[in-house]
Amino acid sequence: MFKHILIPVDGSETSMKALAKAAELAKVFGSAVTAMYVIDPYPFTGVGADFAYGQAQYLSAATAEANTALDAAKTALSQAGVANINVLVGEGHAIHDGIVRAVENTGADLIVMGSHGRRGLEKLVLGSVTQRVLGAAHIPVLVVRD
Image (cartoon, rainbow, N blue to C red; front, side):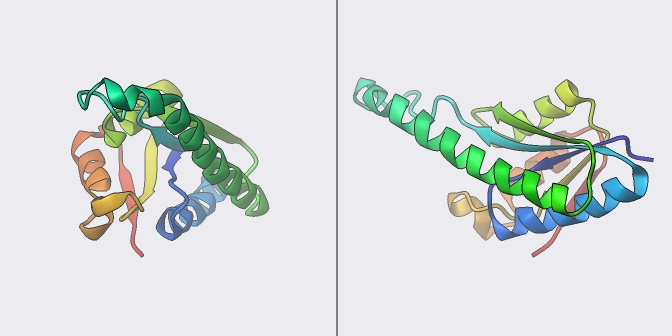
C-alpha cells in the first residue's frame, strides 16, 4: 500500500515513537523508509551582519545534531528489521517546507511524524510544524502522539 515512508526526526522522544510506528508499517508493506532532519540554513537572516560570524558555527552544530538524530534513527530502523533505509538532511527556513520538499524529492507516499517536536515554543502546542505539514502535504500524514 505504501511504497515509501518519510519520517521527519528531531531526536525527540516523540519523533522516535513515530519512527517505531513507521518501522512497523514498513515491515508490513515492504516500504522503503527515509528518515530526515531539516536544518534552517540561514537562521540569522535579517538580524544584522554581526550574526553572520556565527553562521559557520551554527551550521556545524546543526549538522552534528542532524547526524546524531539520523544515526539514532537509522540504528532503530535497522534493529526493527527495516531493509530499505535512507537518511536525508533537508534544508528549509520553515521546517515544514523542508519536509514537503522532501516528499517531492523522495517520492514518498506517506509521512509519519510525531505530534510534537523539541524545537522551542513549538513543542507546547500540537506541533506547529506538524500542523503546517498537515495543511501543506498532498499525501497522507500519520501523526503519532506522545
